[in-house]
Image (tube, protein in one colour):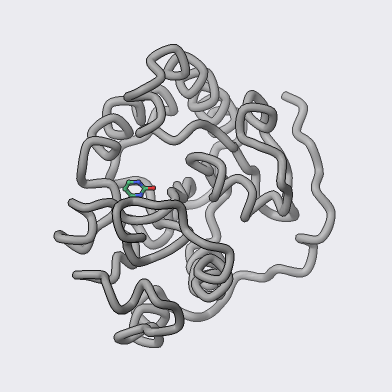
Length: 204
Ligand code: URA
């Protein structure tokens, strides 16, 4: 399978920092104004040594209330699609580009993404997954350092230093655009194929 190489990611190393330590550094984060309006900071959830990490955009209403990513309608859609990649929810880790809900589910602003980025970067380093699935424009553009939209980016895997990146549609978008769902399914099938072609040598 051909994988596209992206420069600028060569110097990342697995961090020795645990997810608990990163969460505790965030504390009652007020680095951007989303800290004023959130109910809960939605840090992330899942297996800390996952081979596959999913990155969404930001918490919605249910996630804000429950403090966990992808527990609402988008999460149900994601759950229903994971098996296409041969994955279950307990094998993966899920986080968002911004950890606090943008009011009214507006898009996260550049300064909010910038303020939150060091924490996501540390999560990625701590988990050190093999594959990162970027759900939607914000995660895809953040990780691939591009302004290109996910419609153009999706459909292939990218190599960014250690990580194989799969940019794809956000599951919430597929609720409204049913014709995008088969494309999201194709992308998850690419991830499944890559994982099968690259079995782990040891237990993770
Ligand atoms: N959409 C996201 O991008 N993240 C969530 O956690 C929930 C919905």
